[in-house]
Image (cartoon, rainbow, N blue to C red):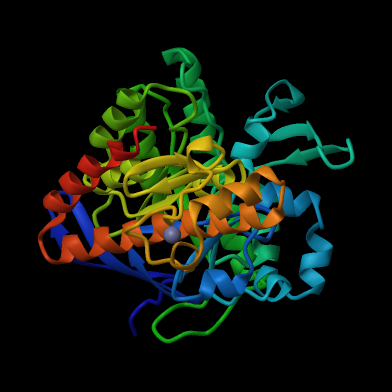
Length: 393
Ligand SMILES: [Zn+2]
């Protein structure tokens, strides 16, 4: 009998380093390269699930944040609801991060030791402790389809020595994550377990490569991670304040050395042009808060670059946000109306801008996949980048 795995990943076309593939999870089939909207607290801020499932967006996978859901509403609430899928009523795929990055970004408010990280909850000020074992337990209770190992992130400008120490800690935590995760799967602690044809029904576990901007350490971290063995591999610790050229140097160095037959996930990146540049270097999966967060502060991403809806120049402009976008916001509403909503402090402004921004990101990835399949990715990349400066912002 063939061994069954939690996910299946099949690469169906390549164009240079760029890959178009199909990732099969127990909660649906996902075409890659894919952008995953961020749903921090069990919601993609401002959007109903009907919108995420609509033809406009058709998001196949979203992110959940272990740190936030663990602190509020807490694991008992989600467990008694039957897991995150049932709690939220989202029946497509969930990936959950480990909480490592959120705890790391608390800065001075946290204390890192070999055992894990101690910090004060931003919700009620209580002292909490997050470790590989706790993170795996929380993610099993959430029942996400893809679980991330608990890692430590070195700051973008960290010295070689500091980064090496942090990277080795990440490797030890990755091993502990793997052991705790495997144990939880045998105990059936995973609330999202679902029998589906050709899959094991269990959660998948992804490893994370760290090493800041030091390419030699990135190579070591990749070896350490692959030695432990995971269902997919992520690059963490980029887009945390380093120069963009450093980020692309690391991606160019590491991605081609990652296992060919597993999904490659670049965490927390980035703008539409970053995504396309990373796809060109062989990345399959992305998540980023930019389309949702910037939507709430009045910034639209369009095929002609960024557009700030606050600007007075749109006061009487009857054009849609993006004349080449076919989303329901662009089909219906003018810049003038959206600007009015925003300046009047209406919540609909955030909702509509978030909707359009996600439609633009997801549609861009659709275009990327098509162009890889038809062998036109270099042309797509050139034309996409060429149009971006047109708004002059
Ligand atoms: Zn639109």
